[in-house]
Image 1 (cartoon, one colour):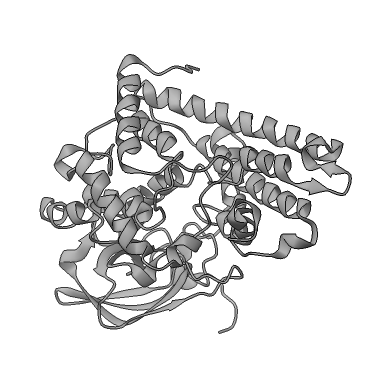
Image 2 (cartoon, rainbow, N blue to C red):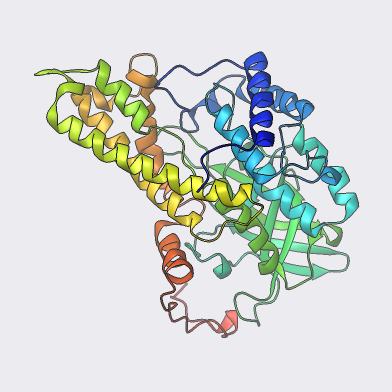
Length: 411
């Protein structure tokens, strides 16, 4: 494992630091991003678009994209370095990650040069926002179990069905969509992939009110939505292969969760008074802090292994799932303990009244979704077991059955 930047990486880090110092405000020590709450604030989208345009102009909006996609043509390690440095600054996040991290790379990989020229630059500059229309109510974690239908009519497709848990659909301009075009084939076959305008006739978007009081996720209903065949990505019936491109990018995008982490909990314990004195001097609190410090360091060095592979031009393997599995669970535990330290006041969510702007409260309410997004805990454990540890795969008796012959409950 290599802990040091190469001379080229060090020079890039210095350039990033200079850009951020000149254009952004540093984050206060012991604080981290809120969980989707800032997206609901007045003017949040406008501020995010302005910051995205500034990043794009400086060449930091899509560091790893090739230059023919209007990207920087940089290395994955440069993207990691930029993310590390930007984490120290209070800049808008949450609006463009899905589009730039998952949707546009899929479109650029499978689409035509004309598609790339039309859609990549405005997404890069923050002028258009994208969402990912994958999950369905009856599918659970099984994407291949989707039921949204696409039927060919001349030079267009008619789509009917429902998607759920679609992040940001209510403010998105475009979306990528995987559908079932042939139910007579096994579930991983007979899928076809499209992109479409979220303003298309027949689309209904219903935000899902979460227990945090915010609505980041959505239900999306399709009623006779017409999609031109020219907006198909990949061959007919090969939608699963296209979807895998999106999923591989998604795993990389969600591999590291935001705070609260050890540093935020440590700051809370330093300033919080318990009945027997400062929380930082309480033995039980110190034991918990030590436990999470060890876990934090373990995750840090696991990420360093990934960074070392990236720096050497290698591709990270499925072991990246370990980071997401451990960090999402740890974040939930840290948030819960932080609220416990606050006692009865821990139930309050007022950002102005609570320590760390109620970050612990927001994180606990958001954490169940984080343990599902980008692959549930169970899916990640299967990936680690099968592809990292080499254990036998689960028996899947439905693998070669036609989708319309799969047993289902009564409807």
